[in-house]
Length: 627
Image (cartoon, one colour):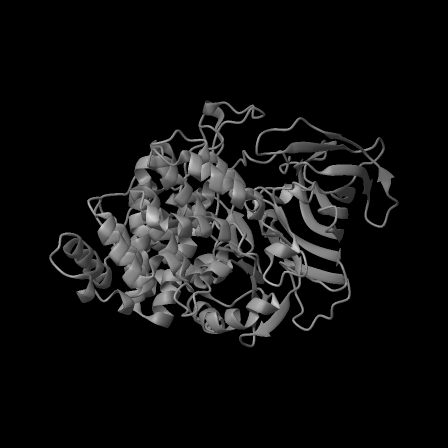
């Protein structure tokens, strides 16, 4: 995913009774659920989609197992849910009403839902809990788009984003990645619309207004997903296809035509694909992330449809999650690097396999540079891959550490042990922990037993621990290089310094990543006249490539290049993907003069943003001007 995340809001919470000296790396500090006493094995959803009320209405039946025979209260996660009734039942037994209490709301975490087992109800392990409820119109996981904000303009659209802890805003459940469960669902919609889920979608499904789904493999709650809209399907390969609104479908099918080849290549390297089909759903532009790795159905931003397949590394990333993140997932959000860092390594390997080493190296260098740029703004404690939960504010984040430092760790191990040996290790790792949620310490133990100790003298456990628990990058990190990006950077400085003319800089022949690198390398001394020449000759303000647009408009805001401000405004209104808009707002705030303008544009764009993007943008807008 990646996606992807305001994740790892690592801090001491008001509700936590755990003192610093009682820190438990295996405890999920962002869930109320008492999953050490009860664990969910299966969810059964029955929901009606009410676009007029902007609500999901219905029930969930949780098939539970009591782990602690003395436990009498089940605690679940919820967030602004309207709970109507709760009942419990033994297998094949009559349902009995159960008392429940919705606790006080905690910022970001929502409210604990405590269910008391009735007197005389003493399950010997397995039992079920049925909760009738409706979601709130402001549920943080759900975006309800009116027709005018869709590609077709005729029908509304609903989609979810459960990662990281937003599933609790549309289902009462144990919202922790440490619990993996299967699920089934019956979804009722307006008859002209199609429903999809992170489950066994049928490409030949007839629009009926009622749809049935099964997910037979256990998944964590953050991979629960739903979408409803005027959606159609196009095949890409025997196991792959793409769903989209009809106005977008042909372009999406062309852009992502290599998806089946990616799946085949990944399975060849890392083991059989375990999820049946792998399909893509192209969402409206308000989707807050580049992609979301919902199993069997990755949610994808339309901003990667550039027309030339230049941004398909995002598809490689979401597909790679089918092994790292979906097949083997993080136990707590502290361990998110096990998802994103491993996946970032895998997606570069897939890009190299399909498109060549030069393209993959360009992406490695861009990722490395973004990490180096962000590290000074990240607290040292949060620069560790597996940080210790401390007294940080709940808003604290790791930035891109879990993606890009995690990727660099795997690059380091591959360099030390050789690609053939490391590939065998990864395939064994995915097979050993398949359908499990693990911690950084479990990864380290497996790595030590199956790689470090098997090839002594190459990498020590202490060296790996430095990556996991210390800030910054170790001195022996393998720094990626790209000859094509270096050429672009050299020409950027030469042109800025007047040594070469812009006519002699072959930007039109470069990859989008080389163009991004050129833009980001330009010195602060560049004049408005030079910026005008660069923009007019290369059409930067009107580019179809969202990554080039992102890099350009960040520079426009930083440098206060006024001729491109209207195009920048349209960029911020057109897209809702956090990666594309939040850094531009941040640059406007930090230039010291455009805070009011940033607030004005945000007010115009906000109705088309997902709640997650709104939260992220508001955090930036609250910063002092010129920070």
